[in-house]
Amino acid sequence: MKVQLADEHATRRLGEALGRAAVAGDVLAIEGPLGAGKTCLAQGVARGLDVPPTHYVNSPTFAILQVHPGRVPFYHVDLYRVGDDDEALGLGLDEVIGTDGVALVEWPSRLPWLLPADHLAATLEPEGPGRRLVLTARGPRSTRWAAAFAAERDREFG
Image 1 (cartoon, rainbow, N blue to C red):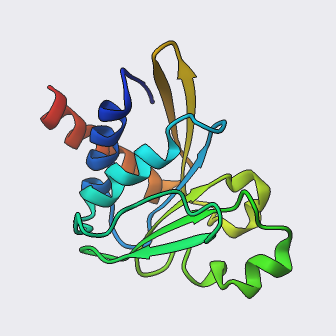
Image 2 (tube, rainbow, N blue to C red):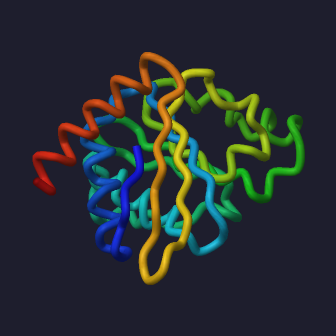
């Protein structure tokens, strides 16, 4: 599924629709260059998961993992600075991805073994003043999430 996004606002709104469609255990693995809008998308997903506005969602580049309360926990993971498998295991990342909450994993290609086989893969690419989002379901669970998201998006965006 390919979606054109005009700006940051559209990226957040689309992320919110993704969050509303998500259930505990869902994993979104997102790739894209620096500045592509991964954090904007994460902010929207957080709102869709009912993370309170008092919990500011920013890039966890230095923290690696941020946990936000919502209708299910929102695990925002950034693998950009994780050095190796041992560091990931030491941080307990394998204990939160695909468990009791929804995980959004930035830079998943750095440690692909952390992802469950069934996850929703996303690529964000800058395109003119906006960006292009490509979503690919990688199994039955993520196919269900993508279908629920499409229905949510159609309701919101017409």
